Length: 243
Image (cartoon, rainbow, N blue to C red):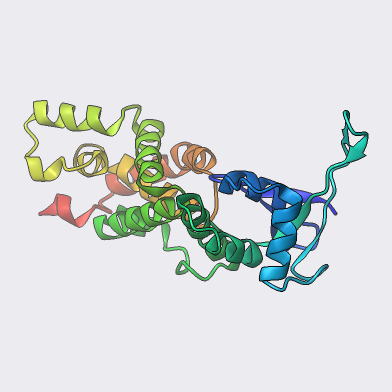
């Protein structure tokens, strides 16, 4: 069985050569911080959840040899929905965190969470920008909590504008921008660099559909941002700026 990486924000989730989303049991066991030895833990989970071999899980024994004992270490792959059940049965913070992460991965894999991609010029409108920001923040919270959302927004702001949110808000304050217009780095950019705010909205949309942030930001800044700048220059303008 060949595995390719699907998502790796919190714990690796893989795609098999048949297109199924799976999690390696040893990696899940380690992430959950289970003190019980792996083989006993896995056998108990198979029994507790009545898992079926070659349906809910399958053998994925490491090819590397244990140098001390001269034998291979058993491993398995679990279907994503099965890994979620196992996480639900682990009564600790790690279990809750990874459960939410698996749900977010399922949403991306199934493509049922998000509406069809909006027209490119729709990203000039603050309402869509704010909705995309809420959507991607909710996803980030799902995979890593509030800290993941803060890190995402900080990194995105830096990638698009060259500044972190706090730096943008401090600069806006010195410019005399009213406090209600500098509640966040994105809010500042909507009023001082609208083409950058548009590009960040486009990036948020790509990320919530599964593209890594760095890749999405690169596409957006190289290709989408110049287009937004051109659209704004010919009168396609955020409504708030026309008031």
